[in-house]
Length: 300
Image 1 (tube, helix red, strand yellow):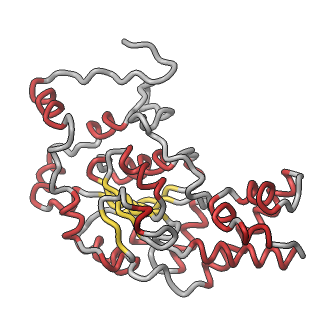
Image 2 (image 1 turned 30 degrees about the vertical axis):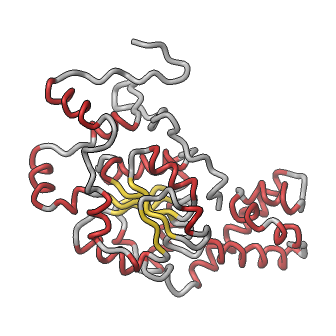
C-alpha cells in the first residue's frame, strides 16, 4: 500500500543521506556506496569465477511477489462491509485508493472520517484484513517462486522490499514457503522515506554495489528509483501496462518469462556508461573522487 504515491528519491544521486558510518558522520551517496560495496580479496576472486553471484536481485512485494492490487481491493470491500460504509467513491478513484497510504485514502478519497485517529484505526483494521487475505491466498504470483528457485540455484542473493512490517512480511513468506529465498527483508521499520532509500538499504543488506543489482517492480516510479540508484530495472506489467514501463531495462508479463541469461545481458554494457572510464582511471591513479555537494552543505 503506497506504491506510486511514494517519491522515487535519489534524483541527484543522493543515497542514504541520514546513514552514518560507525564512529563517523559520513553521508553516503550512490557513488560512494558503489565504491564501498565493491568486492575485494577472496570475494572478488570468487565472483570472477562465478559471475552470477556478483549480482543482487531486489524484489518489490507489491504486484511482483504478491497480487497486491487484487488483495488490497478485496480487503477494502471487507472493511466497508464490516463498518457499514460505502466504497463507491473509491471505485471511481481506484488508482488513488490503491496507491495512497490507507489513512490518506480513508480521509481524502473515501471521506469516511475527518478524525485522523479514527482513520488510523480503520487503516490498522484494513492491514489485518489484508494480511488475512494474503495468508489465505494459495501462492504468490505465477512465476515468482520458480524464478526465486533459479536465483537460489545460481547463488544470486535476493532481497525483498515492502511497506509491511518485517514481522508481517516474514509471516507471509513462511506461509508461502519463501523464507529461505530472501537473504534480507527491508520493511517499514527501516524508516525509508523514498523508494530509492529502500533499494539502497537492500543493496547494503546483500553486500552488493547498487550498480550490480536488479530491481524488480511493477510501477514506473520504482523504475525511476532503480535508475537513480544506478541499478538495472526489470518491470512486471500488470498493474500498469507495458508502455507505461518503457523506461525499464526489461519488461515482462510474468517473472516466469525471465532467465539468468536475461540478468547477464542487463550487465553486458557494464563499464561503458557515462563517466565510467573516468572513474576507473581515477581509481587506478589513486585520485580521490570530488565530494558531492548536497543541499545545506558547503564545499570542502
